[in-house]
Image 1 (tube, helix red, strand yellow):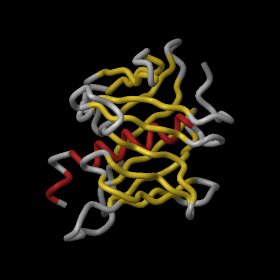
Image 2 (cartoon, rainbow, N blue to C red):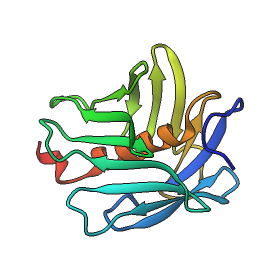
Image 3 (cartoon, rainbow, N blue to C red):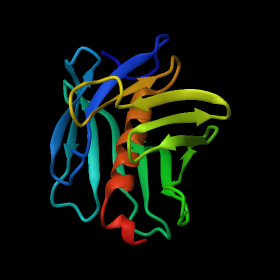
Length: 173
């Protein structure tokens, strides 16, 4: 199965808060079948997650930026940077993140990242929707990626947002 672009929306599900350094887990399709594997790299100076297809091919790599004024993570594929997610300056109301897409229009996040109820938008268009309401399994949330979007990059954005929103070390910044 390819994880580039599709002319149909695709649904995935992930387990909430499994994104700990050194932990591996699977991303499943809407039927609960594993379709991607996330390798949380242990013994790295910075947090790194590699999303792979079931044959071990890289779909996306998510890395914490070490030198940054604000908590940040980059998403790349084959050594080429696709996007950078940055936590906005402290907001009293909620966590805010900016998603800068290399060579494309930036994305925005609308909704509640901490509770996994949000949309990723490009301008006014929804490119992905994240919700835990779709599943009765505890600590599970779904991601629907719009047709024509790069599934690997969008799933990488979801992993990075979850890590940045829930990382206790980042709550101090």
